[in-house]
Amino acid sequence: MPLRMSALALIMTFLALLLCTAAAVSAQGYSLVGNQFFLQKASAPMPGPAPSAASAPQAIASLLPDTLPGADQGRGAVSLNPGAASLFRGRSGGGLFAPVLKAPPSVKRLLDLIASAEAGKAQYDAVQYGASRKPPKKPTSMTIAEINAWIDATPGQPHAIGRYQMIPATLRRLVKHQGVKPQARFSPELQDQLAHQLIEEAGYSAFLASAMPRKTFMLNLAKIWAGLPVSTGKSYYEGYAGNSASLTWAHFKSEMQRIFPS
Image (cartoon, rainbow, N blue to C red; front, top):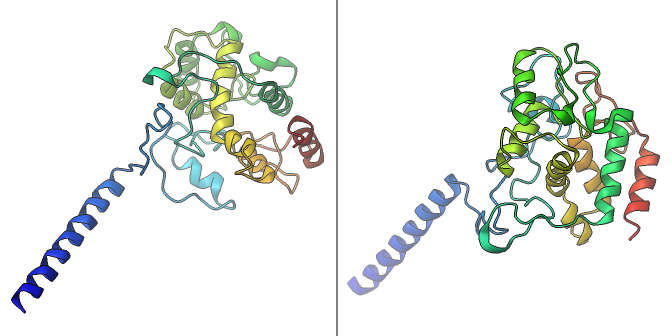
């Protein structure tokens, strides 16, 4: 009898230790496969439960330290998939974002579609129309440091900039994650590089692998780019800070089917 009780006590002690270890790992946000699975660091801290679609704009805005009254809300400021690696970057040797690989044609066509909803004719030099105090130079002639200085010097107005209309929190998150230097020019190449990460965070690789439905991928893209519609035909951020969809759902759907026919 004492022997059986001793064995039971040993088992209970072992289980208690396992539970304590699991709790500690969970508290630190570690993944079972490790957050260096793709030899890339996560683009944002491990999030809590995702907000519902109805409350998403307000919930996301509450997480943004530089969201100001009247500014765009959401728009990729919080990663949809913090563990996603940036697209088209070499993963050998453990280095971050090196070397650059060529993006497949489907990504360029997808970026063109997004830009048609976001940037208009200005393309890489687009600045949000609601910004009353525009940057002193064309965005493609500015460095990241100069863009940040313009943002800080013009509070209380929208600051979405470039072909993909990145708001300050999105731009700063991506720049920090990719290790872009303040002196780097906001060139078309850099803008594409930053947008590649947003596309992957929306589920590009999972969609290509048939692990994500087309409609889910389209919804995720609409959560990042307010000019894209959800299935109702409206922007995911409809009515927030003047956001509305620039494309119809039928056009968005047909273009996605053309870009990704299978």
